[in-house]
Amino acid sequence: MNSAKPSYLTLSEQEWQDKIDAGLAMLEKCVLCPNNCGINRIAGKTGFCRTGFFPRIASAFAHTGEEPPISGYNGSGTIFFAGCTMRCIYCQNYPFSQLSLGRPVPLSFIKDKMLELQQKGCHNINFVTPTHVVPQLIIAVHEASKEGLSIPIVYNTSGYESTASLNLLDGIVDIYLTDLRYGSDESGQKYSGVGKYSQAAREAIKLMAQQTGQLRCNIEGIAEKGLIIRLLLLPGLLDELKDTIRFIAAELDFNPHISLMNQYFPTWKALDNPDMNATVGSDEFEQAFHLMRQYGLTNGWIQDTQQ
Ligand code: SF4
Image (cartoon, rainbow, N blue to C red; front, side, top):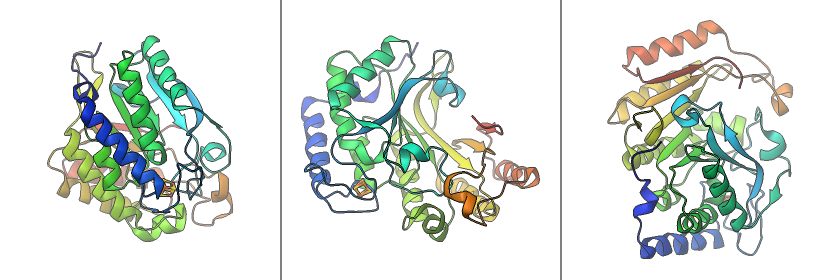
């Protein structure tokens, strides 16, 4: 059981309305993410993320393979969105993130799905790839809270976030579960097709850290609030990962929980890319692990098998 009240249960009606109004305004000339497409999503136009107003859902289920405080013993109530603000050439979820799979749903469907996952005993609602549908999710969470939703919200993201969007989520998201994928903007452009990834993601992580602080769990070890950073070692990018580790150690005020992942395998367009059609050596992974220890980053997990 969770003991602390999720943040969103303390928002006033006025605070909800202000966030919803601000979110809808951002969708009208879409600036939800750093791609800044500027198109009217409310009118159904689509930009880089290939998503109009209605979110598309790839899957919804009790996920038992997330980090232990997220999945717990009953699973994390995962709602996986199709479309994405990035175009990673190695994306393992490319049928949903890059191809037009996943069906558009009304916001009431998302509300009902959250309540259903809570009813099943899930410890949290885990929005995966949610960046491009933040205002819609705020509306859905608001409606669900009126019907009894009372478990924490996990925001599970690539880290390519705008600060304006994160400000909307302040007081709604309890747990940020974010990637910090590249240590340079050049790699973000080259392998994910987006500008200024490193700059945007580093700013985003500092803001997430301010909003939620260090990971806190209840007596059963289930996450209630905080930040988890996922670091995936990519082929040829060990030096960038080392730079990322130094950034985390230098810029965050606490020792964050880090999920260090050695799960890369080439798929999708990476199979045609000489840099990414490769694997990561265990010696490189050990170097990353030792550097984290050297900088005192001792909280978290190592994931060295594919989920
Ligand atoms: S959320 Fe989509 S449409 Fe909006 S700025 Fe980002 S990529 Fe463009």
